Image (cartoon, rainbow, N blue to C red; front, side, top):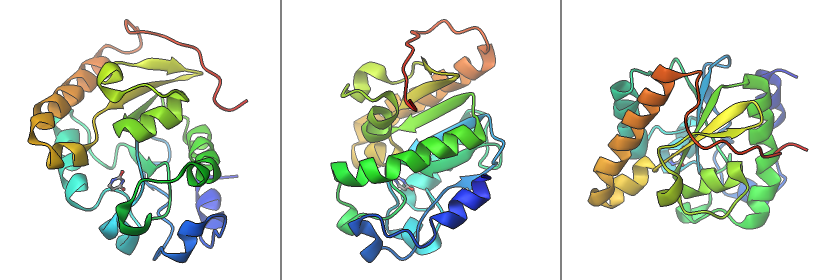
Length: 196
Ligand code: URA
């Protein structure tokens, strides 16, 4: 199956309750051969309307931060853990995550990125399969199978809480440093089995 076929197969997804409130499924966007992928939490108001992840205020900040790290949206692929907007932007529920998570893992398997940057606690915990706080993990790379997970703060968190703005920028500086010195990993490595 190609990425496009996977996206197409989810267009009318009715697997969970979020299907009843969404405008459309927000599958993902960007370069299907990207070596760097970004993963957020779930679509918000504008993403639901436009069908594209990170197009609202958090997306504008993300674009600026990508540029600061020498990246652009055409180099990378962006998706969310949850593909449909939760009502009133509430947190996704555990059964919604369980239902939608396999499609994120399929996206990763098809894109085969070298680095998956998680934005916020939620995407990080989904990809590492562990309940650890973002403040301990951010700005470092963790090897998971044949790619690295690089946890970062969520741009929306920095918009809500000004004191997180500088730490978020620091995460992007650390990402750039990590990308510049690849392929030698000097950061903690943990082998985890996500797909089996
Ligand atoms: N926040 C997310 O986590 N994802 C989006 O697509 C937009 C905002």
